[in-house]
Image 1 (cartoon, rainbow, N blue to C red):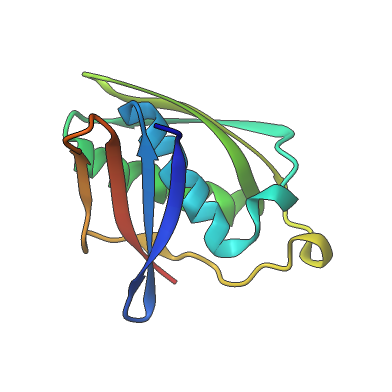
Image 2: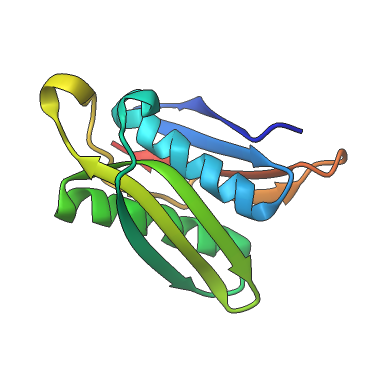
Length: 139
């Protein structure tokens, strides 16, 4: 099981889905899918670390909080993130997102995510043991 991400269609918004062998990996891949809404993640030089903490034990609400925290950091710091290290335990999520300031010429941002929504919010484990974390992003 190789961690990966994908987008899925959802009316005027964009769905993000992360896959991983662990819940941590699935959340990191969902975050990468979020970045890919804006630009090709390969264009992002992950040089500036930002620490993010989200409290809670419900995986779905934790995913919602995680994605919205990233959107907040992207918006207020004018950063794009290209690498994520996520640790989830019974107390919540502790993560580091590495990114860089938006460079309009190099990143060519497509859209600005406004927020993760409750629509199609799911975190589950497939029969093969792979974790899936998905949400719809309002753009």
